[in-house]
Each structure stands twice: as structure tokens, then as C-alpha cells.
Image (tube, rainbow over all chains, first blue to last red; front, side, top):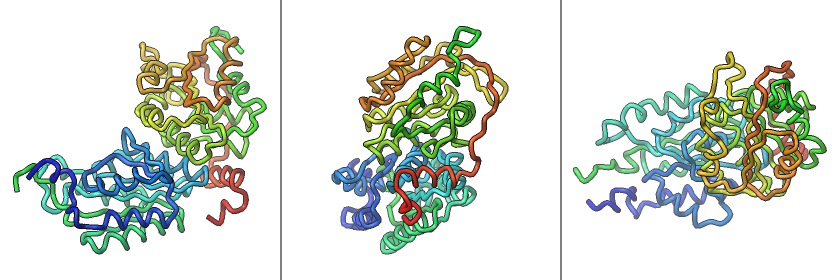
Length: 183
Length: 199
């Protein structure tokens, strides 16, 4: 498998990233915070091409939690895109959402999940949902491509209508496992 | 404005930063900066933090991007800034002109027993900010520099980053409201009116 194919998972024919992009627009998202993940590559390209979305590339994912707090303070809606390993970086900062009742939607692409190759991804991947829930986040999983759109929409509604952190985990069964050429 | 040590008095510095504040939106890092902005006078457009250590500058970034017409001032400590120092790179990339960050550098963790921070041992946050790509910076050690510092925080020619070396004395606690939902709602209402609560 060539490098491009490995790092631009999912299948180019899958349109769920475009459906997430449309949801971000429909729900008036203005700030998109992210640490890149291959699973989000297509969505990130769509966001970067949109001059009405401010894409903020972060040094570490917890910065995105703080950014969403500031955006909401100023009257804008934010979202955080990250890989499951980045959830571990957010733990203490998620207290901001709870103490201020701040909407914080997160869209997480899973690693260390269905068919993982890399041992280093498994500990945080397996802990992702537990850690988010321990910090008060409402978590829903999408493990089929057709579930991604309704699940992300539910996450956006939960966050902005009920003022709390909420996350969609997009399973590796949807994304395809990165295999480093060892298919 | 100098303390007995010869360094700047942190509370007098904050008094100068917030005097005639106009449209200024203020985020204060947890601990002494939050007590300082409250001692000067609590205000709906103050967002003092009780936690989220390392997040003050990024809250300022999100706020500055959402409110590009208003000057946003982050006042925080050296320990808090060091914990989130990577955010200086994120801020430099976005380059919001209306964001200013002033670190009150006492070279200590003031809330936990006055242990020294890295800035007591040669770490220079201004150099780190410049290395991250923030072009407008200032080092403040004397009262005579404060008027220029205040002007820079209001000029909307940033992002602007300054370190002010302040006296390490712990000053009397002046606590802001502790209910985070109120702190958030009052700034949103000041900016957005009653519609803030119907969003």
C-alpha cells in the first residue's frame, strides 16, 4: 500500500466526512480546533477550504478545550477534532466545560480499536470512552459509516442544547486500520 | 508601583492594565492573577479562572477570534504560562491582532508554597514567545515602562506578548465569584445581550 493511501484513510468513496462538514455548517460552527488525524484528513481539507470556518491547529489537544471555552464566551461555536490518543491530553482541561456549563462537542477518530496494528495505540484507545465519561462527557459511538452523520448530529445537539461536553467516537471499523503496509 | 524588593507590585500593575478599560475583555489565569483582577474591581467582562491550568492563553485566543473588534487581555502567571507554553505557537499561527498576553512573572508557584518555576533558573518566556512566532513582545521591569505596556495591550496590533517581572509577595486574597456558570453567562450577556441565554 502506498503512503498516500495509508494516510488518507478512509476510502475516498466514503462520504461521511463530507456529511460531518455539512453538519458543522448547519449547526453554525465557526472555530474548528484540531490536532490532525488521518481519519479526519478529508474533513480537515473541507474545513480549510471554507473561509467562514477558522481552523486552529493545536500543539496539544487540551488547547482545543480551552479554545472552545473562549469561543463560547465570545458568542461563537467551536468543535474539537482529534484522534483517540489526544483525549488523554484533555482530561483536566475538560473541567472547564463542567464548571462553566460550556458546550464542547468533540469528534474523535479511534485508534487502538477494531483491527489495530500498533501496540502503542491500544492503551489510550481502549481507555478513551471511560476517560471522557469520567469527566462528564456524553459519549456515543459510530461503528458503521451510515451511523456517523446521525451520531455527530446528536453530539452537536447535546453539546449546544444542553451545555456540556459531548463526543462522537468514530470506530476503526469505519476508518479502516492503519497497517503500515502489513496487510 | 515598586514593591520593597524593587520589583513591580503585581496589583498596582494590574490596576494600571485595567484602568479606563473601555471595551477590554479580560481572562485571568488561576491563582494570583484572578485575585488581582478582582482586587482592582470585579467586572462582567472579567473571566477569572479557578482551574484549567495552562488554558488561559487559549481561552483568550478563542475569545479574540470570536470578538475581533474588542481588545482581549490575558493576564496570567509564569507557572500557568509554562504549563501551556505550546499555545504560543498556536496563537502565533492565528495571529489575532486583538489578543494581548501579559505574564506576571514572580518566578514562583505562588499558590502552592512558593516553589520556584523555571523562570527563576533562566527560562525566558519572551524568547519562547518570539521563537513561537509572536513578533510584538515586551519585557517590563520598571514602572516607567508601564504606560507603553498598557498602550500595547489596547492597540490591537498583536498578537502581543509581555513578561512583567513582579514581586513575589503573596497579597491579600480577593476572591471572584466561584460559580463558573455565572462567570461565563455574565460575559456572554455583556457581549450579546439577553440573546446570550437563548442561544
